[in-house]
Length: 554
Ligand SMILES: C[S@@+](CC[C@H](N)C(=O)[O-])C[C@H]1O[C@@H](n2cnc3c(N)ncnc32)[C@H](O)[C@@H]1O
Image (cartoon, rainbow, N blue to C red):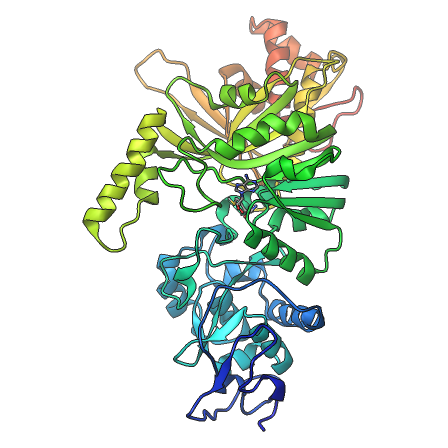
């Protein structure tokens, strides 16, 4: 027997009933594994068929499986290191069509990190001796036993699920890229578990991470948001209608050791019975306005709103006072109809404040092109484009917008419910504190006790201002301002007076002093106070206590 072999795993049926057989030709090789093994039993094992992972683990295997995941993590398999290794500005920019470029330019040095990326993120295949350079023998065996890895007929190791780095966590789910040839994988039916996509990452980054009693993650899929919430919640409930998804979420919870996550199969809130209210509700629903009902994780009916509308309508029943609900979605936009008006109608009059962050906009044509399929036949592809475009036209959608929406109960003591819409690039890092600050600044701005009398004002940090003018036309300058250094690079439209005030704040200035200067320039007091309030509400300036001029107004 070679060093590192495990007899129980040699040419027999494993605990999941999957049969392995000996390869006829014995492969001998020199392993670069740090443990110095020379030969591998893995090289001799070929499963009879690859299959999507079952996401089931024997409790007896759990601790060794955790060790296997730890070995992968120790190879440097985290969001930032994987991102840097692949030369990406954000891991969300990973593209399957660029796989040959990553392989040729970034993964030629076959260190354990390159092998983990190849195997668990790029849906690639590696020979047995490389697998042994990544995993110790017991870890390799347990990961084969659970069906997360198998050997293809050519004797190459392939993953039957991907392992997505999310911050410093690792989340198993089905593969992201259908189009990559992968034996067995094309058989994944409509119950595919949603991979960790850009929308999953945007919601994860935007979620407010304050310590809470109870969290609810609807449409949990792999369980990504439930697992992240588990770190700052006493108890988390995760719901998905797809039993395969709940298996995957439970698998991730088991592997990560989270014991405070309750995972339920069911249709949204119906599964909750008489549950109480939640301090944090997250949801990444199936939101795609689709002519098909092909994927449970994707298709949201013809309008895209079938599931998300029900979620929003039930928030008043389930969101605790002081809590926050955060949804990532796409919404079709009709000419002349603000999206936020539609979302407010879904609340059916419940007094909630709404913040919307528009991240990306695609024209209906681009959206149809992006979703159409044709299996290599151009005629079929164009027909598919037509079907997608017809559906969007039937809904009256001119474009489709990617949006993060946050809801909180209104503070009725100070104001009626407000909504605010901002535009930002998708967040590339944690942005929950910034979302929280948007709500608290909006409240402060509506608080009549929040007078500016005797206050000082300074810029909240370095601000980039972009001005544009049409020379030769009497058109007033339009300007946009962005506070730099934020995870959410929100672009604010500012008027000329607001722009003027921002320019004048190289040092902290007393509000009274600003009013004085404005009076000399013939500008009314109320206009200046309104401009300061508007800049403060949008986080571009800070207003400080009387007599305490702040130190750092750049
Ligand atoms: C877009 S995926 C999101 C998965 C995961 N939360 C994420 O962010 O990666 C949507 C999920 O909603 C689930 N789903 C669809 N309809 C549902 C319903 N009526 N009730 C509960 N879950 C549903 C799907 O099975 C799928 O797992």
